[in-house]
Image 1 (cartoon, rainbow, N blue to C red):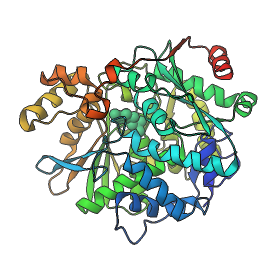
Image 2: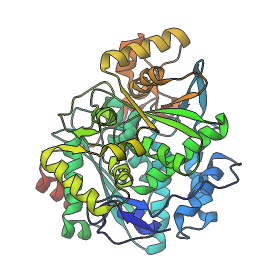
Image 3: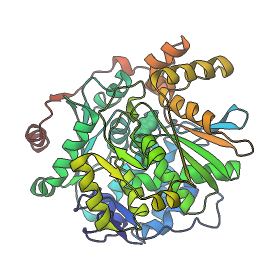
Length: 453
Ligand SMILES: *Cc1c(COP(=O)(O)O)cnc(C)c1O
């Protein structure tokens, strides 16, 4: 299996090079040359299922035996025997809890594995890398936890100052490992993401520090997330509909890939908060940029969804040149439109979309608590609100529960009147000492920090 860039002018690479590179040299994202089918045998543990699904993507770069060891280690860090348990919410509507990993959000599913894949590949090559990433909260803590014990990886994570929750911030700033740095940027998440992209586009800098990415553009993350969609259909049968609280379009893209591989998923419903650029696209065939608006679901407060580029490439018949010029126009004018025939082929049969504002989010958290006693985190609540609007009789609806309620205690307490408790392994989080660095939204300052760390 080889991988091509969505912008068509970067070298074709194998799995190991794609994972270590993150972004392609032409600014595009790597995708496999074709979508393989699911393995015929879908039995075994979650870790065994994962290794079987990954096999065609690895192109022999990692042996099946090694991959099975890595998936077993990664998913042993999850605190539930099912790894991603499914629970009943209401008739015809279930939740898949993706938050039983070390940092309480779904990103652990990918990043516990990615850290281990990185360390394995780097050890084989006797190389070291510097991971630079931007986070709106959950990616940073999950990435740091995923690599905190890796000998061959240094990590620098940028987060928007004052725009991540206290629990999210502390999960990053209290990790006391010599290879971990956190930076509070005076700006938004998109500013942080732009700084990371600019560092990658600075070729001499990128090469000197052997930069690598773990944010949601990394192919291995998208691949790792495919597994729980397959797991959902393995447990529930199919066809099912799945609603996904969405920001960078990474999670729901993995669901789309699972469907391409043959998992019996009927519809994928994209759930946005007030930062609803994707929902507006799925409703109108037009993507246009507005400002970022802070909400109760900060991990979905984004302006431009980076992983959407992978889907756009498919809609363009895998034409990288066309995708690159479309994205250039989008950057220049803030507007992207697709043709009606592309939309009818790729979007109409598969995608639904909806939105929830903060009022809806709180009301959903409250109604679920009153009806079931269950506390939802605000991201999951956005999904539940939209799922309820899209549920159809006879087709089971599954909403992806992307964070543990204790990761967002203020919003949960505001909605339900009860402050959710952190699980035992994080009980003393609020008293652990913090280490962080404040920097302006300025590329030169951030590059100097990375160089001198
Ligand atoms: C990252 C995140 C999301 C959004 O996921 P994308 O892959 O960016 O669409 C939703 N909910 C939570 C809790 C998250 O951490």
